[in-house]
Image 1 (cartoon, rainbow, N blue to C red):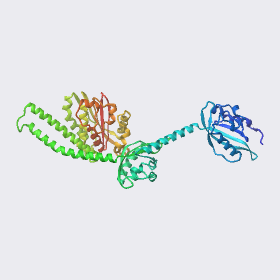
Image 2: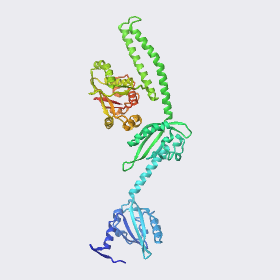
Image 3: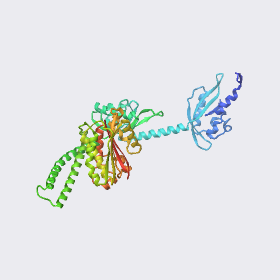
Image 4: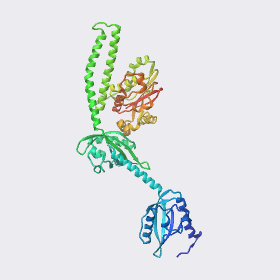
Length: 529
């Protein structure tokens, strides 16, 4: 045996002192046990973990520790001790200890036999508190059970993708929706289940989402089932981010909306047919009313003229509604008509504003146009469709203002400024950014690729009633009309802004707004230069 003290240049080191220092400062409980199973020594960590003092346990046999060892733990400890004394290796194991105050604590025991000249003379055991780990495992298990229950009870297809976009998990309902068993699609990508054309379109959108680590929100896509049938899915998902902030994949759900889409298609077809059928007689009614008002078939008195004038106005409103419904039908079927030409946006704005001066004046409203200091480059737009957007925005500004000013501006801005303005609107709560992937995917893709470095930015600001905070996320939805504006103007279809949005995005631009109730609203839209 080496001597207890070793001389060095620094002085004398007492190995026994070092041993005791390590023994008592360890973060785990350390026990020395003789061959008969009696505790020879134990460090002070035992008091911190269990409330028992060292002297309460030293000299006692393991099997007699009924107070500190849970009843079910005693045979486990005894069995493993006997194995080690027989020279057999024992893997780390877990038991429950009882604290002096009655609480229970999970511990992990790692032990090995102590040998002297190849003879086993006792046991060295390290006892580690694993309560936090157990709680985390229980929480994880509960979460997994909850997720499994949701996956089993949901009619939708729940999935998980790895960082390369491959399925690593698929719930059982994938078979009901796509005809594949879960194990069949593991390793495939969502694009493997689409036609080439659809996959190409959705890939572009998905790349933009992945690049920004955004959520997937209401992304509609056509898929092909195992039997070759087409199904329409609504995809929602969230990014899986690790502790470093790196993207590890996506987790989400696909909902079969084929039936809903079919119903919407039939409704759109009905609206289209009905609208066309109604437009012809309405046009005839308009023609007959104009003839009567002209006096060609006999003079009318003041009362008759007033009544016919009201009939003309009602007929015009019906024609406008029919045209809006037809536009909505075209938008939803992807048949929106565009005839883009290179033109000056400023000329379209000026010629449109002029038509509203008299109406604005009669409503005690002044329209001011801030022209760009320098003439803007030409833009490629459909003139009439762009004019319709501007008309709708000016009309709304006048209708929903009691008095005050309407300020219209036009300027050239770089794409970075457009994105910054939109983000500012998001932070103020005026845009539900989580929905932009599905609704403005085309615009996001253009801006991400920077196909256009500059945009023409149109803005119109009024001092009207504003849009209620709780309704601002619905502004561009079909048939939306604010509660406050319905009280002011009972007439209106709620389709104008929906159509404006579709037109602007079809031109490669984007549209958004900022609004404060009772203070006014500002609408913005861009078109690429």
